Image (tube, rainbow, N blue to C red):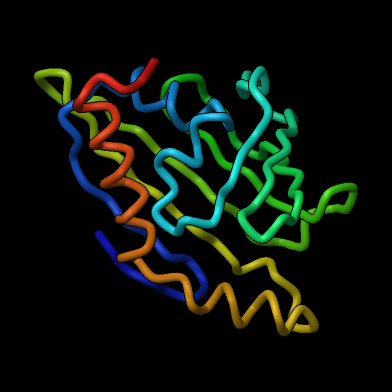
Length: 155
C-alpha cells in the first residue's frame, strides 16, 4: 500500500511491536526527531505529549524554522494526525497522519500518510515541496520507528 494518488502519499508495513509502544513514540514530539526519516526535525521541548484532538505541539526543524502542529485526528493508541504551520500562523493545508492497527502476536500494521490535497494553488512553493514527498520517504520514518520500538527504545 505504498502509493501516491491525487495528493495523498501513503506507506505501510507491519512492525514487530505493540501499537501502544509505537504510538508512544509518535505522540511524544520530543521523540519524533529520533524516527524522522526525512531528517528534517531538530527538536521539540519535552512535555508536549499529545493527548487530545485540538492539542498543538511545537517543533523546530533542522533549518531553524519553528512549526506549530495542530492535532486534527486523535484516538489514543490508534490514530494521530496533525496539520503543520509556521509558528503563530494557521495551517496552510497539508497533513501528516499515522494509523496503527494491532495484529496478532503483538505486531502492528503501521500506515503513515502525507495529505496535501487541501494546499491552495497559490501556495506554489509549498506545493512543489509537497509533490516531492514519496512513499519511500514515509517508509523511511516507519522503518526508523520500527527499529526504535523493536529494540525497546520506546522509553
